[in-house]
Length: 378
Ligand SMILES: Cc1cc2nc3c(=O)[nH]c(=O)nc-3n(C[C@H](O)[C@H](O)[C@H](O)COP(=O)(O)OP(=O)(O)OC[C@H]3O[C@@H](n4cnc5c(N)ncnc54)[C@H](O)[C@@H]3O)c2cc1C
Image (cartoon, rainbow, N blue to C red; front, top):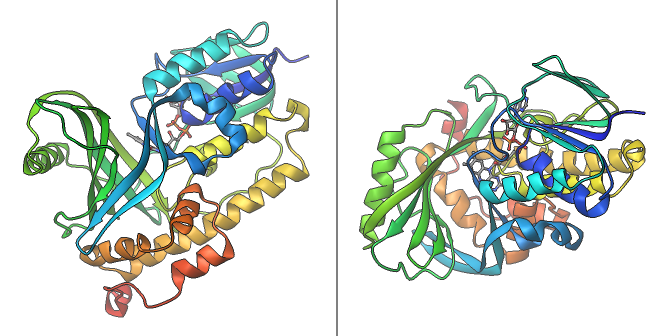
């Protein structure tokens, strides 16, 4: 018999969710979690819409949620809209705390391997840099994305965020997911503002762009300019996070088969249209945890892969048209049009569970301002 039921490689979002779901669904399962860092989860604030995830996922996600708001706002030059529906945030610290406890209290022999590099990842065994071999009935490889490369056929959602304490309350009752009333000359750009406390904010300057390079000094300055323009006075900055998330338009999603389950970013289990992966990662975690390890790969799994693949193909088509048919300064109009759509289509887009009707709504009608044949030909 293998030493473990599950050997999870990579202690980021995907395997963090799988370990949390296993704790709920199969409390006696023996888990090994291997992470090369000294803590789990890295340095992120992950957000998701409550409706992105099924009621089954919510049963085990609850302990991870640190902040929650009743909805969110978007602001564009010709549109201001408030959308209802709970929006939640999970921090790396909380993920570390909950997942470490889930593994330590898991079935007999469950173990956390921190500061350990997985050198070789096979179907039923993982060899660590130290030479130690871990055998498992199922191996899940969630080592995150390969480093961004400008050669691939993809755009990026890239951002820098500053978590700050203000001298006085900011007065926001919900996040501003996009404030796009800022300079658009470098491509679609918006500020993302999360109110983490009455005078605490996370403010991110975000770009949808073909290039994966970030200019941190300039982005910090732009955030502080934006904050000052809102009339907010910064008392201190406590944390910074950066992200360069791939928005592919041509990468194929490989159908999962026997072998290590390649999950998370590495396996293509993310939303190509946002670079985010919370809803998809939660769906996969629930799937993995709700059946025994020897029943993982089969018809149901192929069906899950096919469903994901169809959603991926469609959202890649949207990426392709965004990056190929719209000049950088015109891309904002695609998003302003998107936010005029019915709330359930917007929700289904974020959740990556678009229906045929949603797809039609997204591509039919008068095209957004800025669609350019000459840009495409160039
Ligand atoms: C700053 C930031 C904010 C984000 N915000 C959101 C958000 O709000 N909502 C959302 O849905 N998505 C968000 N994303 C995207 C999201 O973080 C990723 O989609 C998600 O983390 C991918 O999960 P993963 O488990 O595949 O990879 P990761 O979370 O990157 O985890 C991979 C882990 O594997 C470890 N690892 C790699 N190689 C090895 C090895 N050889 N041996 C051992 N360990 C290894 C890494 O150290 C890392 O901990 C954000 C990303 C960033 C960077």
